[in-house]
Length: 170
Image 1 (cartoon, one colour):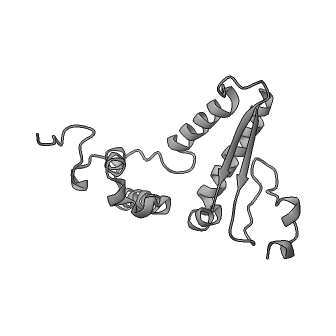
Image 2 (cartoon, helix red, strand yellow):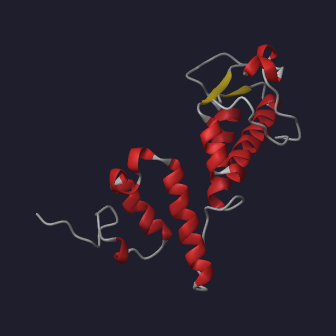
Image 3 (cartoon, one colour):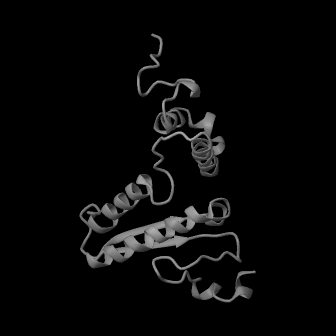
């Protein structure tokens, strides 16, 4: 049975896409073709290129994937629902959520504004979760001993006690 291109879940040529969401559906259907090794950096590069092309060609198309766009708002809402409301499989009050972000230095080098925005979003949700007696802990792993971040959630980003001194990280 042939695949109908009119179906929203059918693979099709990129030139047949009607907008960014249609194109992203194609990326979802064939991630290995569009994102070698599942690279988020490649996805961000594609989205930035798409946005630049919209601007250069004066195309009036909504683009939800910039910081503060609808995607950022959606991510903030979803994390807020999980962090603040739970439930965590019937866990006792005071339970929480732990996020572990590995190799964050690679993301921060490739997308510094987005990397900071994600940490800022998590910090804001952690503060909101505490109002509901929930805990949100975010552990950020980096292979770069010199990585630095501007404050997130109006608080400085600190190293753990054992790696506080620059010499201890080298």
